[in-house]
Image 1 (cartoon, rainbow, N blue to C red):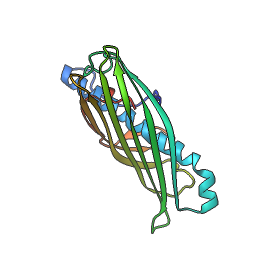
Image 2: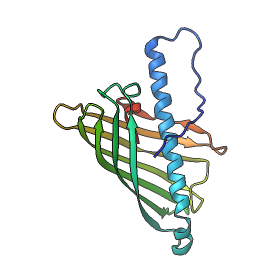
Image 3: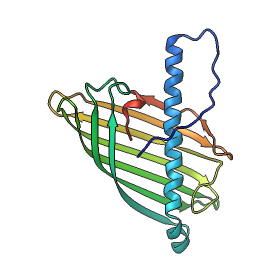
Image 4: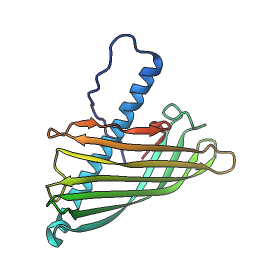
Length: 198
């Protein structure tokens, strides 16, 4: 899965910011960019399901499987001792359900697992899970802006032996506006979002 380059508008004071404030602002931007990426992925997955939605009506569950390959450099993720490459497989489940008020909910769950190795020969297992939810939207087969979405995102790299291990936890909470731009509504992260390669 490749990352998308997104332009986000964040207002920040031009003068008087401390380095700590700058770092926090950068982290908020990184988390917001990842949240937007996952909102776009939900729309793409729903669009792929379009033939099934029109064939089987509004209630839909679709499962897809894809290979996953990623690379992390120490310059991007300081938790690593060397350049690390991972390979595995993902399972994405998209569920579309009607709500009582005539709208639809979209729930996308992506689970990824696999192994990784770094340039020093250290070996790892990795586990990833993202749940993205659009609770109310009137459009099918995919949610059409504007819509709110939310959900947790976790990545775990488990070192074997003396290899390093870490966990990244994020909670995405945002809105895709009518023009396709993104508004962050309080997404949070524990750990460095750059250490989550998926």
